[in-house]
Amino acid sequence: MKIIDGWLSDVEKHCSPHFDQREQNEISLLVIHNISLPAGNFGGSYITDLFMGCLDAKADKSFAEIYQLRVSAHCLIRRDGQIVQYVPFEQRAWHAGVSNYLGREKCNDFSIGIELEGCDDIPYTDAQYQQLVIVTQLLQQQYPAIMNNIVGHNDIAPERKTDPGEAFDWQRYLGQVTITL
Image 1: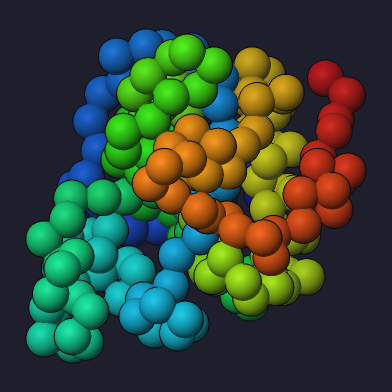
Image 2: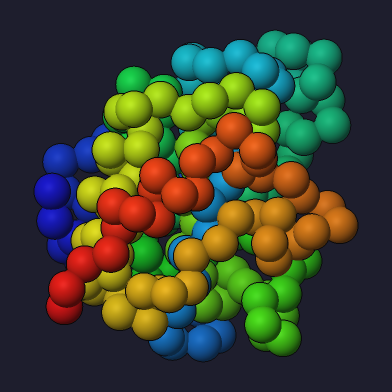
């Protein structure tokens, strides 16, 4: 796998309409999220449908509150390790919302967002950790400023968000991502 023109090679791609140009050029933050639709359910097309702006409000009662959201992430890593990319890394995906990192607001401007298919309290899979480490190492090579700036959504929006949650093993993940440039 490589990064070519902001896209990962050899992954499924869907071009989300929910992105725009970055206001700040340097990418210096990686944000780890989780998502499952409906909550606690894995598999299916609902996450992609949400990020593509075509989630069916009638498919689940919980979708009535979210089907019109204009959100995206750069990538999703499914439970089986499959990676789906929605927005090229050079563009601003709409994943962080109201956020602040070390006094800098609007984290979407300078961050990359990776969603893990999961929930705060359900352990992530070995395949997800493997793929997340690989993608992180590629991103660190391409955007060295993120080397020491990897956080959870809860770290940049602590009053609104809890993901990736207590089930995410930060020690396991961070212990594997350090690379030599």
